[in-house]
Amino acid sequence: MLEKETQWNKCLVYFKERIPEQAFQTWFDGIAVSTLTTEEIVLQVPNQFHYEWLESKYRHLIDAAIKEIFEKPLIVNYSVVVSHKNPNEIPPLVQKENVIPPGYQEKTQLNSRYLFDNFIEGKGNQLAKAASYSVAERPGQTPFNPLLIYSITGLGKTHLLQAIGNFCIRRFPSMRIQYLTSEKFMLDFIRAIQENKSTDFANAYRGVDMLLLDDVQFFQKKEQTQEQFFHLFNELYQQGKQIVLTTDRPPNELTGLKDRLISRFQSGLMVDIQPPDLETRIAILMKKAHDDHLELPFEIIEYIASHIKRNVRELEGTMVRLLARSSLYRKDITMDLAREVLEEILGREAFIGVTIDHVIKCISKEWKVSERQLVGKGRKMEIAMARQIAMYLSRELTGASLFNIGLHLGGRDHSTVIHACKTVENKMLKDNELKKRIDRLKKELQPLGGISTY
Ligand code: ADP
Ligand code: MG
Image 1 (spheres, rainbow, N blue to C red):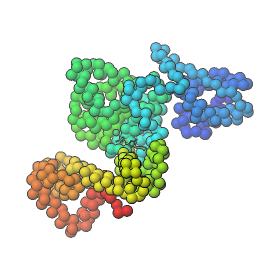
Image 2 (image 1 turned 120 degrees about the vertical axis):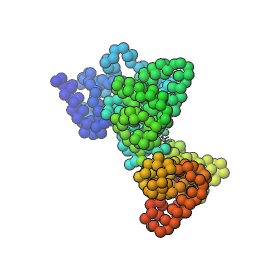
Image 3 (image 1 turned 90 degrees about the horizontal axis):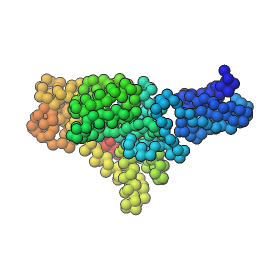
Image 4 (image 1 turned 180 degrees about the vertical axis):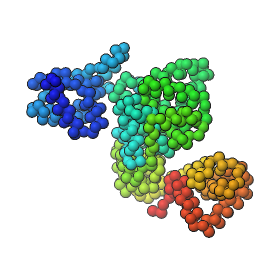
């Protein structure tokens, strides 16, 4: 082995011991030394971005390694060598100050606001973030293809999806990345059919290197669109292109989606995002305040974070509303003002937020009867009882009319609903276990937990 390689290998060991494995593989593993003199070392890197990244993040580490291994400092230079695996592909021209290709936002539909850097990590989203990051570092080359991220709304799915794209476009400027919502996919598809251009449509998407498709639950019951997507999926997958999807529930709960599509979704990695814990919520608010150059007393941040529990979007919204209120009325941001704003938000959400559908889902899980049975007319005892509880909870939590509740739950009239509610109330008086169970469901269903007595 040449001396320069032996020496460089020692440097590699030095790096490996000091940085995470992921980072090592990404940034150091493939580097070769093209020149080594007593004064200078020239490192061969695959692209401009790689060089910039090494310079900005790892320069001190590289210098330290060189000093130790070569026993004196060397001048470090770089040569950018594009891989010649595909000689037809013209290497992208990358300017130093502008790593991102011009016009990329329009083409890719990426929003540069969403980055890994400003995504706060906590227990509930750790895995989703780590998986997203792996995929972004080695698109199409991890077992995580497709990667599917699911959670209830407002917990950062879109943020992560976009962060993957934003990361990749900087790292691999020639990569064709496409972010889009499932709704847009469908609308484009419909337009293509109308204009007799469905082949163009298919070809346009077949050409991408990375497909980031948001809110796939939208495909439910849209059979033609599913079909189209199924073929696209297979084609991209076979070419080793990375696919990342999000949904608002686990794939096996996506009713109205073809089984073969669901099984494709399940073939890679599925990760969920859980609502953030208190510390994470505080961290998110602090980061947001910091990024917006706001000084919010910690007491107020903590107050908001401890009341808004299940939705990061709502968390941010509360802060925005608080600021708006303060500047509009020229009031200082005090605890009183925070309380006022919070009560408005929680009061409203706690009542409009829950729908009869939410109740049906929740009861179906808890009492292990299917949703079909709940909305059907069957009179078997367990089903009838579960249905009555669903009626009771719908009346308590949704603000829907008795007529609507009856219509949804077995097509009954309003007097049946009244009777059901009375029956449940009576049972709860006598049966403490049942009461506890129903109270727990009430809490689960109210997305923001209601107003606490502060
Ligand atoms: P979803 O797609 O799951 O409905 P979004 O990705 O739109 O949710 O997130 C809602 C808002 O909350 C966005 O403004 C996003 O930037 C922010 N957000 C969500 N999770 C985090 C997090 N962990 N750190 C920072 N911001 C977050
Ligand atoms: Mg979203």
